Image (cartoon, rainbow, N blue to C red; front, side, top):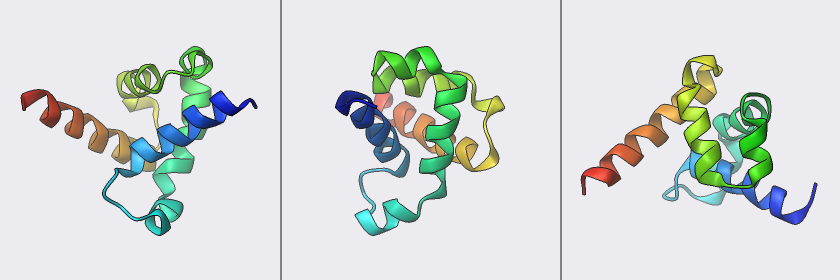
Length: 87
C-alpha cells in the first residue's frame, strides 16, 4: 500500500470517528475498522481514486449493505454533512 492510499484509509477512519474525540477513543472505535474493510469491498473504485469524499459518498449510497457498526458510523457522518450543509 502506498503512502497516499494509507492516508485515504486513515482519513476515512478519522472521518468516521469525528474530530472531537481524543486519539485514545479513536483507536477503540469499532466503526473505523469495520467501515474501512467494507469500503474496500463496497467501493473499490472510489478507494483506488484516493478521494475521501468519493469513498464517503459511495458508502453513504450503499449504507444498507453495511454492517450495523459501520451503518451507525455512516448515519453519523450523513447527519454531520446535512447539518453542515444547512449552515
